Length: 209
Image (cartoon, rainbow, N blue to C red; front, top):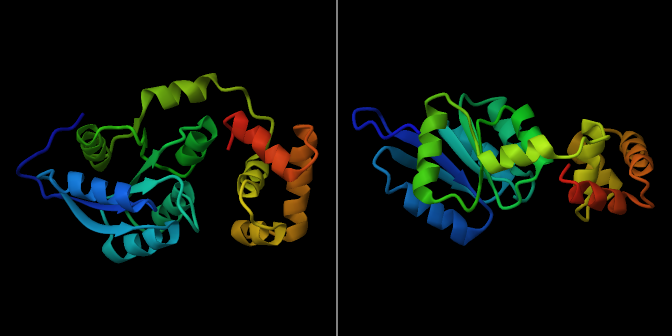
């Protein structure tokens, strides 16, 4: 792990988490680190994207499960426009989510149980250009059963775990409703599921979404 360099400028950090107490605790604890400066905080994925564009932090610490856009979606949008690095923190470290995060060029992936001191070291590593994936999460991803679904089918099923309609899912994915229905139908067939919600639950249980 990279240790604090007293001569280096502070690492400018954005923290995003929809749970007020957790976000407040992260901000308070990480702000105690002499080489980390909190420049923004957000409670939704879209707010994190806007705050990142406004403050251009060195590192963004994003919760996975946030309203509007989850941490991986927010990361992809941030990294498309801001020269920063992203660390995802999650309570549910599922192999499929790790694959999505790596595809989105996320630099760090850690569980929410990570102590603040260790999290600060991860932030330093990521700021220095390295990547950090929690070893247990990485091991789970390597041993997970092979997923038969395409990335688009997984995207459609992931949104189907919510109360979103097919039209709303199509809007989120920037696809036609008919295309989304085709992806959902294909996924249902592959997973032998009677509904998109059942298919989404099966995919969730396997750790694919």
